Length: 324
Image 1 (tube, rainbow, N blue to C red):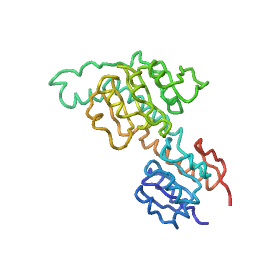
Image 2: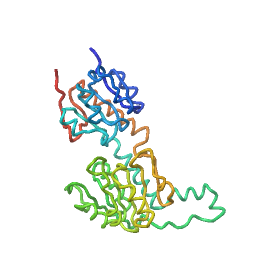
Image 3: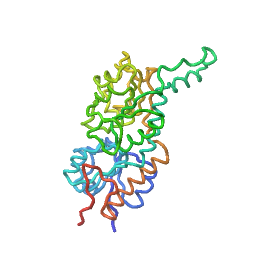
Image 4: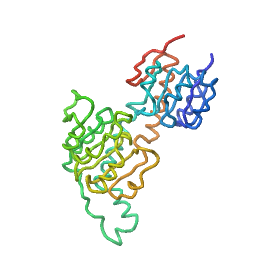
């Protein structure tokens, strides 16, 4: 029986790279190859495996008339036009749950680093300043008595909230709807959330609906003791507004694992001592990335062998592959 033809977008996790050729015929393209994709190959492709390396947009979809499924590597799938896929009857899957705990651990670590200036303190020691200048200055902020506002109380947001509770933090949240299964304080506007807290944890997904929603108004509402942590998507924060807010003291500091135009990071942010910067490492352990990779493989095998994806996204809730 002929193996299904799968288009792999860029390089993938090592487990995915090892497992997919055992079950499928693999073809690989980069972002620069989309325009020149061979029409004959495009006719044969029935699945895509990829992350954010190459957008799955109208241009690419138009070249793949027999595409059935897009298996996205990552819980966020803003690089995939899931709405258009849904209209075309193409299933989209992602990798939720398997990375929630890892990202939540990173979020708490990033928050601690930012609030207590741990990165700057380490640089003080490594530069020999503990000897030459004395102890690192007392930190301006403490985690004690801080109130945490979570933007995006999904699986990862709830995992963060559980950890923050153990630190004695009061938890508030904002999202599209109030959630009846949590006791945290809900705010029906993001500005209202920012006014009520002093630490804003951004866990929201990317996409047009969330682009730049953490803007100058929200940052002003957070106030001069405010701290912003972002482990969601860089596009959720208005980066120029954040830079200005940090420069003029509108907020105190920020801890960022994601950026608007990765891997480019604004030079203004890099130059600031009151900002902690990480290179998008929220889920970046071998354990978690392999779990994510296995779920990509399982979604594709489930689709082609059993007619069922494991984790379809909300825009394409297809539970059965059309046969024939």
